[in-house]
Image (cartoon, rainbow, N blue to C red; front, side):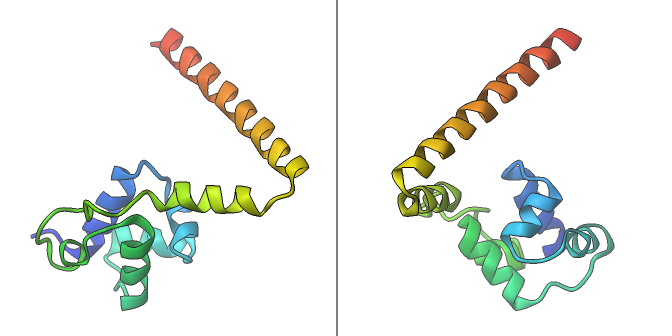
Length: 119
């Protein structure tokens, strides 16, 4: 039977996040997350609640394996968070954020092309 620790890893991989990215968003260290995922470290209620709230995970699924992984009505909170940050910035800083985002997108696209050429 799959335990909560394994379901946490399933959530992280479904979201396509590294351990570091996921750990940052649930306010624990990457090494703690690694111990949860690989060594079966006990998961406290606070971590479960944060995962469910932050990523729209069905709490019954996470704890017991019942139902679907994600609550259907939950939006992608990462997008909301980014929009909230953007809205709090001054216009010049909003422009800077857009420029940086465009640069990241260019690098991402270049890496995809490189990866395809190496295959």
